[in-house]
Length: 114
Length: 385
Image (cartoon, rainbow over all chains, first blue to last red; front, side, top):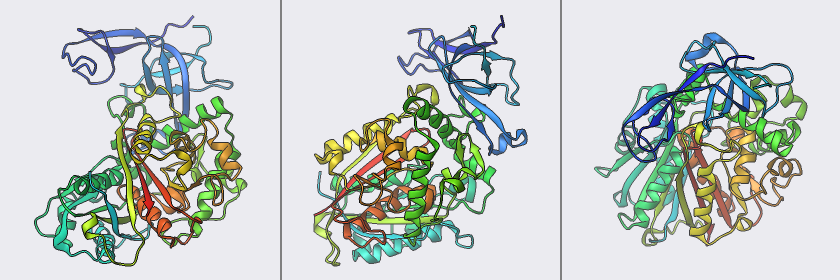
């Protein structure tokens, strides 16, 4: 059993809405108090692709894989993905220690038994 | 709201204009439109200019004021409008509003972009300004990447095949060969498409629109100024603009853009028309799979059947609804800020009956311009009276 990386989110102290990124105002109730919470990086693979023409910021990495994941907390997130033979959309995935030069993005791989 | 009509149109070719400054491209298209309109310049009450990335790629801003001045339009309000790839469509809607509201009797809208002098990585970086760079950007996602993600889901949900998606490319590239404004029309085969370089799997090179230089312009007017220039009367039947989520997280279905769905609904409602009334559409095929998604979102093709309709020729000339007779972004090119206005230019020529790739008996045409990750969308319906 692998232990997933924990991922940080903001949660509105007033209405409980989850937000990601640099956000200090809740879009739902406009409250400005956001708590930081950590959730396990476990979810379902929505889709993935391989970026072969990166922007300047990631140019030195060459080709890399990006995936979209629906976390079990209901949040949809974009991150790096480590594909393996036979991976299917809808597979269970976990967050693993990040390989990206930009450490603000999580990295996922398929782990069928979580 | 007052009725608004097309008085004149102008466009440069889309392609490489290395030696021409960005403002000169805009002025060329705008001057053509003004001359064709036959409206005195003192009647023009507002200029709107659609542009996305003249700052990062050309080091030039205040383009609206520069172009207004170069056109001798005096002290009228000149406004640059930015909404990523929908910049042109949004600028058009503002010109329409200026006349519909009674603020002025004539307005000009110009769209322009100049991109081909920059490297692919520079262009990709500039375009990525339209992404949510707090959430999606740090992953290294690009716009081809977004549509690679969407394609995989479309293939799984609806069984869309490589062959079906290639049918869009073959059609639009062939249409582009007939359009003298187009950057890269071509006669393509499935084999040639599948042999092209992978860009963002499963998206390949021929599935992507090129970077382009170019400009397009439209002069709009009220009934009072409608030119006696011999052109048929083209009326704006609906102009709708909507917003959608700027981030992937808030798109519940990556195979559909809420902004397109709602803009289309609004345009049908405003015009009293239905999808079956649309003879032709110029839609935002920045990538082959985007045409399939857009055609479904606009209600022109049943959900999930965009690929099949393309493969069966139902979106070709002579089909159920003609999509991108101009060659679309895939073949005509995508000078980002000019694209939405270039689409209207194409529809106007079709409704006038003078398009080089004419759709027979074209009476009602639609344009669809989508920005960013579906953050901004405009849908227009034009009709020949």
